[in-house]
Image (cartoon, rainbow, N blue to C red; front, side, top):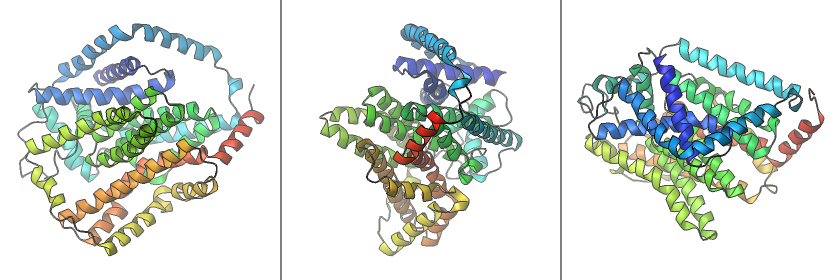
Length: 459
């Protein structure tokens, strides 16, 4: 009961924050509320620790409550409008607007989500990284009331402890503060909200329910991604925040609405507050955004977009220094050598991993196919979307290569990591983007539009 109340408080906190920022789409706002609320809640917990205020259940409740009351003073009028929108939505809701195929696909999506959540709550946390890092850090935060605790530099613990940004750890600690025995419910909540946001975003973008539900379904059933949906890891939350950031940037390129750019920035803040390597994705999005805004003589907007995620990233690097972890990070820069033979083998292994049917199904195969089919049909904003994907992948590859060469690890170690470890999990970020592009490509969209209008309506 304590945890349910806390989740509702955090979600309401996020909802009011989004209302304060002027977000209008009610269904997307409902889905984003938990993602944004959790981001703000964990940042708030961190700043309380910085000011040497120890956390407990009372403070965990008070934090979103106080900020919710402050936001409420500014958004009372918006909330009335939202209530009218909800009444209008339910008033226009009718079974005649849907078809048998959509309902059938929806039932499959709901089944897979249900199965993932059941699996997540049944099995305890067992994956190595979670047990020895994320969950352990969350328990230490609850035990000490702060992340700046005496356990940070003990050699008895792994040297990687507290190297990762703290959104997942603070989020997991919420479950422990409320007396739960497992933190996997947090990952499931993020998963459900991401799917809900993704569906409603695609519907706003495409105006086609069939496109929306097919995209969501194929994202869900991607084998490796679905396997990780029920694990305690940082990779899935990173994929949720980063992919949404790219999608909101895309719709900003198309519609030129500042609200979408703000949402993209918020999601990117979540990314860098989950994993350090998300700075590569910040760089990829910023380069394309800067170019587009420069052409429109609005460069200031691009740098304002860059400011919040960069601030969070730099703040965390300062914390690493204060934690005494700078020696570990400095290894990356000890040996910035380039071996073109190694780069070729790494690139080859990355491609083999990308096109593995066991890992990512048909995601890369279909994306490559439709990229070729639609090469003459892409709109300018779709090219910007593809350029962001390419730059994100390139920047991550550069960081990946130099981090390993800096640590002095062998080529074989790099290749194993690509095949079996961190690289294949980073690919999760691109899976929603690929399926989004496939089902919104010119010819597929035309087919779905025709089917939506002509076939199988219930009314």
